[in-house]
Length: 425
Image (cartoon, rainbow, N blue to C red; front, top):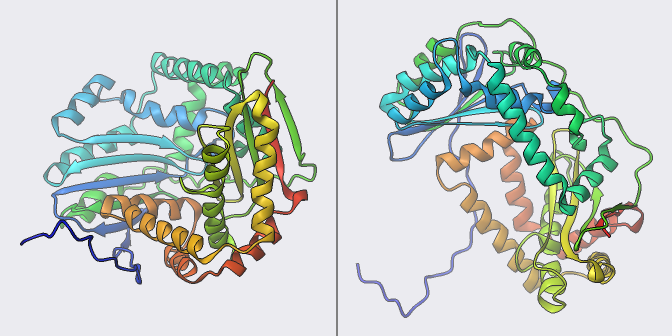
């Protein structure tokens, strides 16, 4: 095939979005399995989502420490042996804790799945949580906390979320130094027994797991190893005294960290997709209005962005930047000017088409292959959303008008809704 490198490739519009086919079934004990069988390589990724997030833990650090400690040793193997076996099979086991789930991920060659699933079963069901391993994980987190707590960016983020959700709910980032002393091995053991259970657990499989994957999963995870029900998955209490202006003083700071945003809603809200697009115009990509004005034209910061953070029961939009202390007032003024312009003037067609095409391309990239698709699908399960969420966003993105975006700006970017948090001198 001859390629003419003097001519640019033909430009094609993206007119259709289709999610990979998903086969769903249940194991003998009721665990829900979501299978996306695709790809050309004999490798599979399995994400186990347990109802063991920080909201269920209801105690700072407990969910993440329990999750990380799973691979530090079982009643059958030391932590070093677990690592050696993972390496021997050319596999990968990853762990992370979110607000509403704790996740254990296995990536394995298909023909080694009988061995790697046996290893994973031991890790999930039989961890010993030795005291020295718990202490090591807590000390590591304590050091990370101390380093982060000295940054104005961290101070501003904590103040912003605590202002929205309070210090008593995990959404409010409420870890303190005392929490590192108050977490015990007994807490970890008890939480594991109550939260790493069949009921409420999901398994997402992507790639090529083989024709016998259902039998393998039932053999290792289909038994009723616990008859407990999931722990309470609580919403944050409604706050009626949200402050609009907060200053977190840090006298030795060379920079000021700015967080300016508004409380929003979950992804189920009918205006959510439109707000995602509006946010992209404002500060959601490198060519956004905030980057153009505050970085490129005025040189007030190296970087500025806006993003929407959504949880299962709440959400917010926030603009984030770090600037020199002497540039702070001008930066805040220009941020408010850009918000005001979205309320007062229509976005022109050229800019809207640029943003539309950027988001369409970004969407296609985010679903490139079964593993990437499963990561996005996992987000739906975490937030209890239907699979139609992605096609709904695609439809809104293709059809939304500048007038509709302006109406959203008028509705949600009202001056009285905007929260400004500054951390610095």
